Image 1 (cartoon, rainbow, N blue to C red):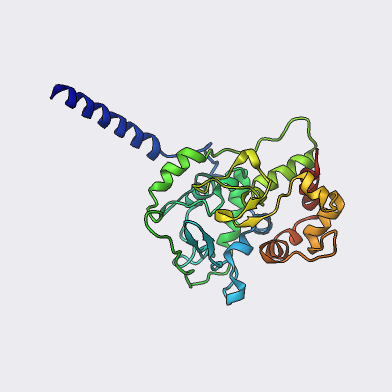
Image 2 (cartoon, helix red, strand yellow):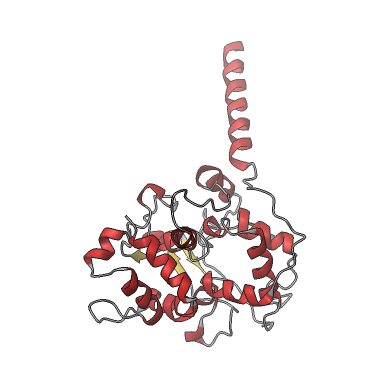
Length: 291
């Protein structure tokens, strides 16, 4: 009997230890919440970060940033929410601290956020950019119409499970430039891994929906992130791209073979990359085509 009690005690200790580990908060460096945001810079970040393509379902008559089309994944269909300044249907009642927590650590007022929202990428943004983006969203036209509900079946609808997922796969941090590289290269890398989140779509994921960072930008065969081609240097070069052509494609959607990119990438070009500065398109092209 004593031996069984010892075994049960050990199992209890292991269980409690595992619970503590997997449920502990995952947080990165503290944000400076005293910074004053700039709406104009924030409006550019809305385009840079792909907010429009995800959070505006224009095909179904939704207003700007009032809710996007559903993203189908093996874990359910996630509907991007209303992120206008409306205090009820949108995020107008969020504080800067709450917004920073969602963008940086994947924790919203409603609990742990699903990685369908690319906080793994937004965590790399600077403190000033977070303040700027918040200011721009608070200045949007409020739309008092909630987005449709996501359809996430059991057990994936248990948000607390995301605590374990974050402990396993999420490492919040800020972007660190690569030494020995040009400013343009590092800007492009920051965009691809950060706010533009190219890596989020163009990288395969494991069975739990986590990015396989060892195969970044090698393409996604489908599943959680949807199907997306490889955008490594070799893959792009094989399709006839160089830096100038790639930057131009991000502006007008025309490929080296004179096709026009459609589907999700067409939306990204229309709502995002075509409205970037020439310098940012050139920077991401330099990074993707670099040896």
